[in-house]
Image (tube, rainbow over all chains, first blue to last red; front, side, top):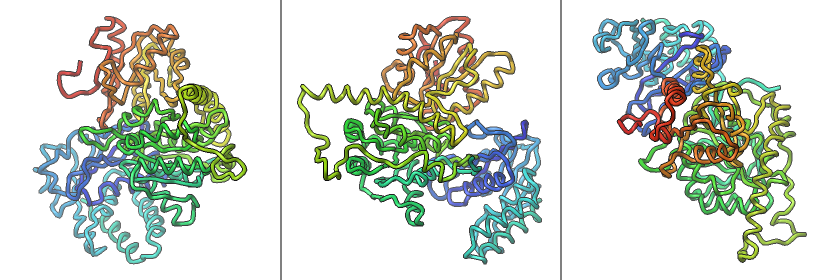
Length: 191
Length: 398
């Protein structure tokens, strides 16, 4: 995290919105004046295949374009990936991992191949289904990682999201309300 | 002067296209440039552009339609990648030899095989002898800025040649980063209206375009075309100078990064230059004089300028993101080494093939290249140094 640089890696499956979440995080960090980089790693794109996306958030210009091998934080959008992907590979132990699961951090830790850093969990499925009636895990996880990483103040994040979603869903107020509810619940529930 | 935004490289070039608002865009989608016709179509549907968009059935057709439109007198653009560019091959030469200043956004991607969608320069490098001007970008910012300068260069009466504005597929085309955009008004004033001197739809000047020519005339036509490319070098510099007045950003034929007093230099094209700069800063902190020559313009090839910029270096690694199967190295390596020889530049020089098919270019890899150069300075060049692959998985590394 030297030079005010925070690096985040997202693991998801094609179609779950990990790339969108990474781009949204870059977006909201830009809106508070940060240098940002949000990008997906593309393989053969297909629904359900494991995909990776990345964020760099910094106080200084970002010149490097390589993938992130030693992230400060990792977000796992689909807990079934824990069995097939080394999600904590290179993850700094001073950092943390956030996993979308109804389980507690203590229940999840044995699946993390001896990772020594902090483990957070969030039931993004339940939150999304309650708030939006559909399974879009990325909005709750975005809120969760902002809180876990502290890349920006959670209240600033909340009001920036309010502004941007109000604009984006100007004609769909119910979607706006649902997303804001999902963000609020996630900020409260991440543990 | 400008305003801050965040955009992917494709969004940035599409935004430049919107600001320039050319007359015609024939295009056929191909990854990773598909978003360009997609964004432009949206702009048109939203009434933000009045470009005539022509959906075609192939890239051969998109370039053919671009040739027709440009010959008719319309400012024309298109976009493509990889096999799409390869499929245009035949007609690329027609565009250049008919002196049609079409602007094409190329989002660089590997050619088959194995089939792969990721960044590499083999597509545009393969087209390097087709007579098109080629300008490359490290970042989304440069891709945007280069596209804004494209027509001023291509349509200049001393040049009149088509131009490719290239950026690395996915690495910059799909990565969202900070960017500074320029307001529409200064952009439009800078780019100006296209007023072709000769064009097909001029009823007062009947003409034929692309006819057969016999041997006694063909060579003169080619020499005249070559003169356009020779002239392009100065025009590129003049346009960059003028562009700096509306953008505050300076461009040349190349960018030297801590190059002036460098003992060890890398020469590279595109997005990899970012991590190279990071490595240079760390090496400089340790007192090692590392530098970079970032190639911006590849066609025309500013060989003398590049060679002169490297004349005080002890060791140079030329980085090629394209294989040319010559068994001697890549296209940048062969052309630059020829220019260095002509200019009497005697730095020990190696050619490094890297980043093919989107193979990630990391800090450690680049640091390794500088370490190689320091070893070569002490121990001299071995035959195995001349042409190598960077970051290979197996023992063929050396």
